[in-house]
Image 1 (cartoon, one colour):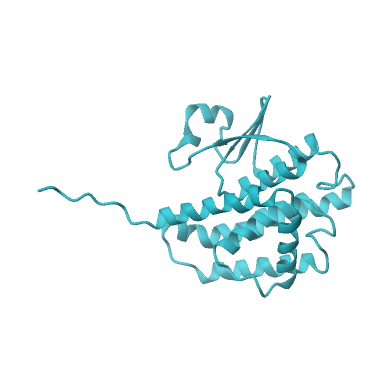
Image 2 (cartoon, rainbow, N blue to C red):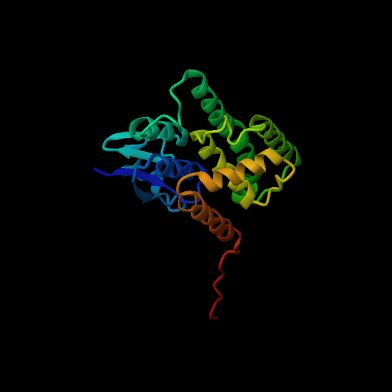
Length: 224
């Protein structure tokens, strides 16, 4: 039976899961869910996920949402080894910490700074930009001399963080001052399985959405 994955290609949390599926080697049955058309608010979808959030995974009746929970589930259920999500308590705790850092600090700063501008046409808030700078400073410090975010092995934390950082890049945020982040970013792009298919190409869908939202509404001229 297929594993159904309700998603929006440009969404960073959805790309987290796509990257994880590639790394684990599991095939997902992709079910594009158009939020602008309210497909996540239909009676059928709410039966699956009462919180009606994307992404949502349906593994033969086992339904899960929140991207990082889906990531860890896929690895533990289908992973061939524990390299992406170590069983050792201390190593796993570091991966979890970085996942929580991405969710609560790095990605949160992106959403807080950019999304009001993209989706509500508000102005950029300099105070929120400072939080973005702070998040990158912390992340740069966490990486240090390591190849990856928790050491020298690719983990789920890197797959989550790379979708966030690649979104920052798309949005023209200059993170070049953070040399460890730049080195890490190049490393993950080069080594994450199926990176272009799971993150690079879907990221372009986010740009398409931004371009669509920027277009002025079409006006119809009267024939009179």
